[in-house]
Image 1: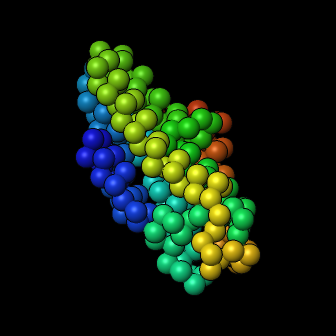
Image 2: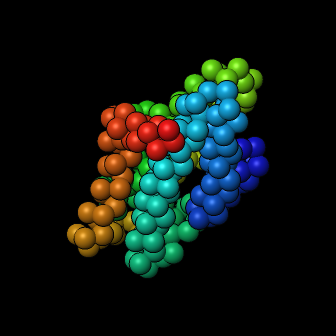
Image 3: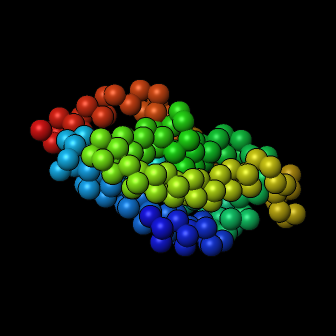
Length: 200
């Protein structure tokens, strides 16, 4: 968690940032395995966390790939400046995914982290839960930095006034993925139960 979050903060390339952050996310998932022998919910919390992370990571990389077809690679963080002005819907989908990775309610990432922290506390690893919470706050910084760039910065000079148009099929696929991050955050019990049942 420490290595992934610290290295992710230093990145100016969004793909590398997400790659390093995945190290941190795997660290969070391992917390469930640590708590598992002492609290049965630990294993299901780890499975729930990995399942939701795969969902939101796939959506984020899909948006990066879609944007990269429009005259720039969209790999540098500065490429996301003013994305809301160029395509508000795509910026909103990216916002949902970044919020979920950061663990902001009501997205599914919040409940994924909450489940792991609860399992750690019940397993009497309160100090580890506090440490994980600290790293989650550090991680939120670089995810929310993307949101800041999209909504509170002007597009780069060469992109001012230009709109990004996405084919309906691609937009629908990304929208379903991003909406799932919000829907599962508002109604997480079904997926949580599936993870619990699969480990019985």
